[in-house]
Amino acid sequence: MLSRLLVLCICVAVSGCLRAPVKDADVQNVRTVWVASEANGDKPGFGFKLVEERGRISATFFLLDPNKPHDFEAGRAFPTEVVRSRESELHFVVRLDDNRKDEFVILFQSPLRGDLVNATLRDFERGTKPIALMFVRQK
Image (cartoon, rainbow, N blue to C red; front, side, top):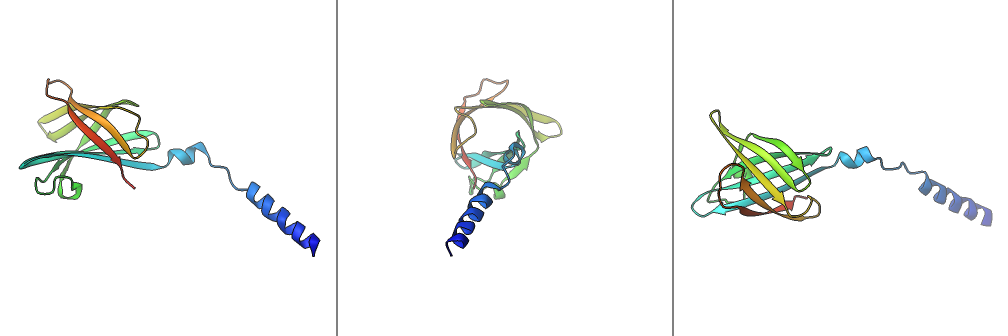
């Protein structure tokens, strides 16, 4: 009886040690999404969806319905190209139509980790007033 218990304990201990190790590639395959939006009263607001996957960030710009200022599903997405990405900065171009594009920079106060990240949105070329944003990690 004691030998069976000893064999069972050894089997359990060994099986715990034989789990497949987590590879760095597995960690990089995680898809993480952050969103931030800004209401604009009775005018359309805007929002950003950032997706980090395999170590790269993609972005989507949204014009949001003033009656649903934080509802991305009710908004209109625009093609967005990330030009340069750093841990503290994201430079991107939004194409509003075939003839118009706007360039922006988001400056992150901390890396995109955790549940909330504060940031500042700036127009790349014009001297418009910076806008404070809070990116919220989606579950």
